[in-house]
Length: 364
Ligand SMILES: Cc1ncc(COP(=O)(O)O)c(C=O)c1O
Image (cartoon, rainbow, N blue to C red; front, side, top):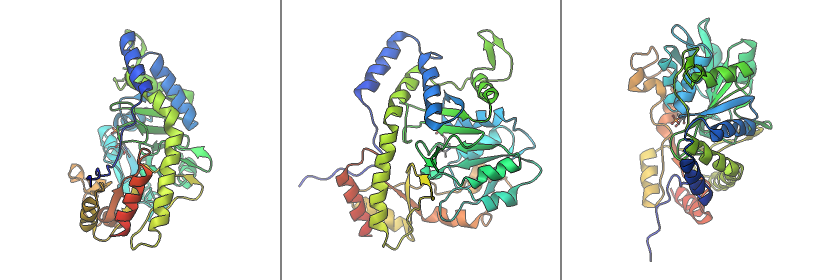
């Protein structure tokens, strides 16, 4: 009997159109600031129902550009969930402001509105919400923030293709940021990201100028800026991937439905979908009591796993000097990080592999 290949946590989509486009753009000699980046920015904003936007180098600098565009800096506080990828929090420190870490909802693992209310001070200048694992955050947060005139940044790095009550994520906040890192729901053949803005054309323009050296003309730099641009080849690849995104999200949902059905009676916590949401299922995350044993069991059955994420942001060494940088600050987050484990979910997972994952989880 031949040994079955280990089921990986992801598999790249690369097709002939992407190969031909790469060669075409390479041969054109037009490598930056050309028609592909303009078209990709427009098409991505349209797909998400945002006012406007542009590609940029990655999802981390997208967040820095977003905070900069909102005028956030030293002395300001920015509310952010601690249970997220580190970039959602470090961007705040990168502009000289202070992250204020808050809890997540126990059902959906996204930022908790009650925790936000308790964290608000006169210094609060922004809220960063994260559509973690592809689950849209509660729409109540946007209403609350609007009442308090606090801008919201959607960190949508894991949310491509998600929506809530028929409205795409990326169209809720003042600004939304995306990552096209290779493992994300959509990729660009390297690092990549995008920034969308919703509240004014002026804000779109301000961000676009910031990521291109504050330039109004080739040799004229009006305001502070830097280079966070994305290359033409990557934008060309992104435009092709975008054509497949909706089908990929449908496939992710098909796999998630099979998992939810198969695991409903097992002794472990399975993810929930927010009412009215289309989940983008960037990750399918289980909560188990003995994670080490579970990971070993899955590995023995030829299934890869991941942990997103084992250390909450407030407990990362980088925040050891932060007033919240010690255990006992965010109890649910701290507990959750010890129990979560991600299993394979990606569009190119075959039906046979889905069955192998189900068999392995069910036999634990
Ligand atoms: C929630 C979240 N925010 C931000 C980022 C940063 O994106 P990038 O890796 O493209 O810089 C990521 C990427 O892993 C992410 O998952």
